[in-house]
Image (cartoon, rainbow, N blue to C red):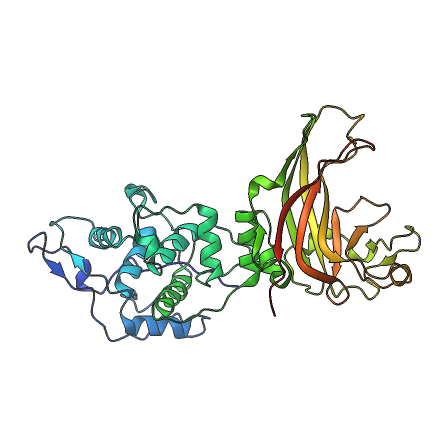
Length: 403
C-alpha cells in the first residue's frame, strides 16, 4: 500500500503565506481557491488525480517551474500548513519577519491538532514521520482528541489512525512509524481527513490494523478473528493478564504476543512465523505418526501463535526448564468426535508440531469444524511437573458475537 503522509512545497503561490503587517489579533483568511496550473511531472503518477484535485481546492502548491515533485519528502511545517489550509482554519497575523509557517503552527495549536510537545519548534523543517502525520491527522478528525487535556500514546495513535483508514500500511501492512513521507502521499492523507470530516468512511487496510493492534494490545485476535473474539468481553483484555506468577513464588512467565494467522491468506503478514508450512502437522489426539499434515486439506483454518518468555524459574524440579514460555490453551470450544479426529477430521482446536509436540508454540482452529459454545477464551499456566499445581490463569474471554 502507498504511505499516507504529508505535504506542501517550499515555494508557495498563496499570498496568505506572507507575514501580515496588520494588528496582531486581526484575522486573515486561509488561502482562497486558485486556478490549478498544469503540472509537468504528475501526468503518469499514481496520485495525479488527487494532486490535481487538491490544487483546485487550494491546499497544496506547485513550484514556480510548474512541477509538483510528488516524491519529495515533506516537512512538519509543510504538513501543518496543508492541514490547516484544507480544514479552512482561520489564521491570525504575525509580526513582520516571522517565519512563514508561524500562523499555521499557531492555528494548529489553537485548534488542538498540534501540541507544543509534539516536536521541537526548531525542528519544524525536518521531514515529518508517519507517526507524527498520523497523530495530527487523527486529531484533525476527532474533536475529543483536540482537547489539550487528552493525551494519546504512540501505539494508540497508529492503531486508531489505521482502524478508521487515515493511514494504510506499506508492504503487508507494515506501519513504519519512523519513516518519512512524500508530497504525493500527503495529498492522500489530506483527502482522507476531509472525507472523514464530511461524514464519509474510508477503505481500511486490515493488515495495517492487525499490525497496529499487535503493537498496542500484544495481540491481533480482534482484527483477524472478530467473529470468535469480538463479542462482549467478560474477562477484559488486559496486558497485565499476560504475565503469570505462581503462588509459591518460584515461577514467572510472560506471554509477549498472541498472534492470529489466517492460513488461507497467502498475504497474511504473520505467516512467516510458522516457517515451512509443508512440514506442519496437527495433533489428532493419538500419535505423532498418525497425525496429518496441515497442507493436506486443512488450510481453511486459523492459527494462534504464542510468543513468550520465562522471567524466572527457581525450581526446575517443580517447573520444567525445557519450556521457554508459559503453557497456553483455549476454552469455550466444544470437543468434536474423537474417532473422527483420529481419522483425519480437524473438528476441535489442537496443537501444531513438526517433529514432536511442543516444538511449534501454536494451536490450529478449523474455520468449518470447530464448534463454539457461548464464549471463547485463552488461558496460560505454569509448566508444572505433576502433582504440582500449574496455577492456570484465564487471560481473557468473551461472548461469541451474535450473527
